[in-house]
Length: 53
Ligand SMILES: [Zn+2]
Image (cartoon, rainbow, N blue to C red; front, side, top):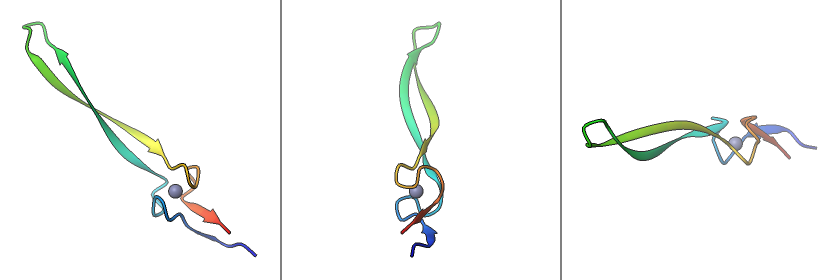
């Protein structure tokens, strides 16, 4: 018997938002920090937010 329960890895959030930092140069030669946010799907539940068993 297996009932769906909240995924222990992501707590039901289905994934986590991650931030990647990179640096670029603008037209004046100044270094500009950029933040690239992206969604990383939970591997444990496959993005479902719940696991069974
Ligand atoms: Zn999960």
